[in-house]
Image (spheres, rainbow, N blue to C red):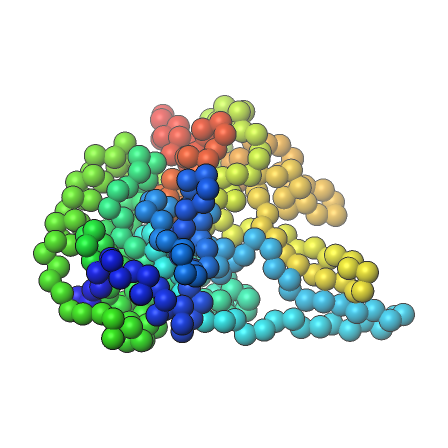
Length: 339
C-alpha cells in the first residue's frame, strides 16, 4: 500500500493544491471542524467529523440556476451554468462518503441534475478511516465500515503514516499525480489500528441499533402508528436535523429581482417547516405531526422502498448531537419498534 509520513502532510497538501483546489476539515475557533480551502498554515483537523457534511460540495446550500432579462414583453433566458473546477475533498469520513451514493440515486437519475452531475464529475473524494468513533455514531447500522471507507481514494493513518488505496480510475489518477511523494510500505501497524477501532465500535452505545424492523414493506404499519403524536409533540420544527444531515436532498426554487433582472436560485428546504411543499391550494401537511412523520418515514420506509432496500440515513450522528430537544432518528426507531 502507498504511504507518506504524517510529518510530511504539508508537503502532501501543497502538492495536491498545486494541481487542484483542495478542501479539508480544519478546526474553527470554537473547537469544531469545518471544510476549508487549503493554503499554507491550514492544518487537518483531528476531530471525528465536521459540523456540516461534505454534501455541500456537490449540493450547496444555495446556488443560482438561471437569470432572466426583460424588455417589455420580451424575456431573455440566460444559462449561467459553467464548467466546474477540478477539486479534491480530503478527509471525508465513511458515513459522509456513503451519503454521496444516496444523493446520486436522486440527482443522477433521469432527469439528471446537471449542476450536481458536473460537481461530481470534477470532484475527487479522498476518505479518511475513523480511529476514534463517537458515542453518537451508528454507521454500522447501515452496513458502513468506518475502517474501510469508500470514495475515489481511501486513506488511513496509524499516527505515523498516511496510507492510500485507489478505488476508482479517478482515484488512481490522483495517486499517480503524487507518485514522487508516495512510497510502498508495510501495513502491519495499520491493521493493528483497524482492529482497535473495531473493538471500540463493538462497545458503542448504539452498536446494536438495527434496521431489521424497517423498510419499504412497513408503510401501513408505521404510517398509521399512534406514536407519532407523542414523538412529535416536543419537536420545535427548527430544521436543524435536516441542515446537518448529509443525505437530506430537498430544496426550494425562488426568483429574486436584482433590479437589473431576475435571478432564479435554489436553496435547501426542510420537511420540518410549515411552508414545505406548500402549493397554490395550501399545504398537504398542515400539522407538526405530519411533517415530523414525513422526515422519518422518508429515511426509514419511503427511500428504501424505492431504492432496493437502501436506507436514507448513514448513521453519522449529527442529528443526535445537534437537536436542541434531543429528538433523533434512533429514538424514533426504538419507539416505533415497541409493540
